[in-house]
Image (tube, rainbow, N blue to C red; front, side, top):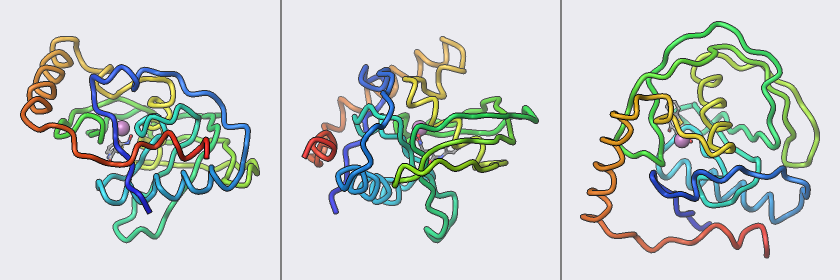
Length: 180
Ligand code: GNR
Ligand code: NI
C-alpha cells in the first residue's frame, strides 16, 4: 500500500478549501486505506485529505497507541461544542513545531462513513481537538494560523530553510487515487 506525500507549510495547496465527497466507491475506500497507512507511518494521530493534496472533505484519525481505534469522517460537521480549553498541538504539515491552541474540548460531530451512511458521535479531549484540527485542514486552515504573525513567520522561515537543506523524498502522489 503506497505512502502518500504529505504537503508542508507554507505550501499554498494546503490553503485549498476542500469540496464535499459525493461518490462513495472503491477508489474512495482505497484512498482512506492509504491515508491510514500514511498517518500510521508518519506517525500521526490524524490526517486530512488536504494534507495529501486531495481536496475533498475527508479525514482519518486514530489516537490509540496500537492502531485499535481507526475513525473515518467524511463531510464532517460539528453540531455542538462546549468546554473551551487549551491543548498543545502539532501537525504533520508543520513538522517539529508544537504550540498551544484554544478549542472546544467536547464536541458532537455529524459525518458520513466510508459507505456514505450518516452517523453522529460525541468526542472529547484529544479526539475533539484532533477532529477540529483536521476539519480546519479541509478549510485550508493550519494550527499556526492561531499563533501571532511573528511566530508564524518565524516558523515559515525555519521550515523553508529545513526544506532547502533536505530535498523532497520521492513518494507516491495521492491525486491518482480518486481519479483511477
Ligand atoms: O499527529 C498529530 N498530532 C496532533 C496533536 C495535537 C493536536 C492535533 C494533532 S493532529 C497531528 C496530525 C496532523 O497534522 N493532522 O492534521
Ligand atoms: Ni495537521
